[in-house]
Image (cartoon, rainbow, N blue to C red; front, side, top):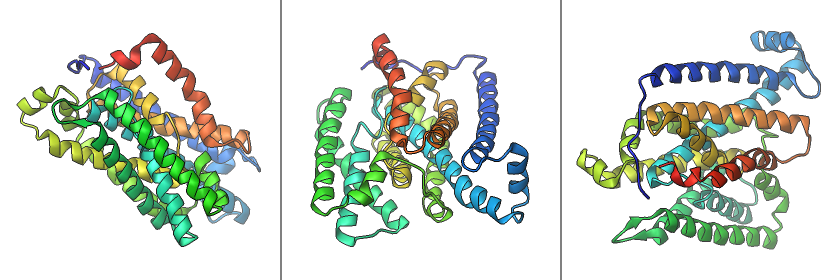
Length: 340
């Protein structure tokens, strides 16, 4: 697939900061909205007062601080991590339709969780995170090993085919374990995706690796921009492409596996959001990554709000219903293949 040099228009920094600040304000408004809506419903003044003075009424403190705030923060972290991991994956593979889900990472994490429940019966949050990391690493290793060609390297078509095959295999194995060990109660809610039940203990375990992964991704944004160009160009600029690929893949594993451990498998977020932003911002990742993180966080907050308004609807279903039409439009216009 032919790659094109990234473009940085003269007004891009100004446009970036305008969009960046707008997204920050939008997310703050969304947080207030997510804290206020639900059963019971609170007006914005009451919600703000409860946040500012958490030692007020016991019922409001319980609902806002112990139930709704951890759920909203989890939505922020998961949306940001999925969008950034998708952007990283697209840059690593130089493939505009790559994301962790399409390359089998979610299926690998699901299989590892099913195996953990089958062997141990119950899992602590730290064990869930570790298993998801191990399963995601296994899936990634299988996909890269099958897709790599000694003479031609990693071709986008080979990655997609290998990822589809590995994802199908690992999903089937996970479903077999679920049936054999009667794990439907433990696994089905995780497979559907959701933020119900998120608490501060879960966040204390899973939030640190997500935050570290987001920070490292931004620190290496310039190197990723170089890496996303043609391999010969990257090597000509003095970059060790093999080491950089392994490091960036490690970041993808940390971000995606942590998100999967927190809320389950959510499709298309890591594919659509960075792809849409790239159409406006080009391939300069120092601009793309922070906007992808904020856009992903905002999007998942909206999805969580819809889940509150439509009780019982799986979060994965809402995400797919919102993003699938965009995916079909991009594919119809050919932008998924012509973006790089």
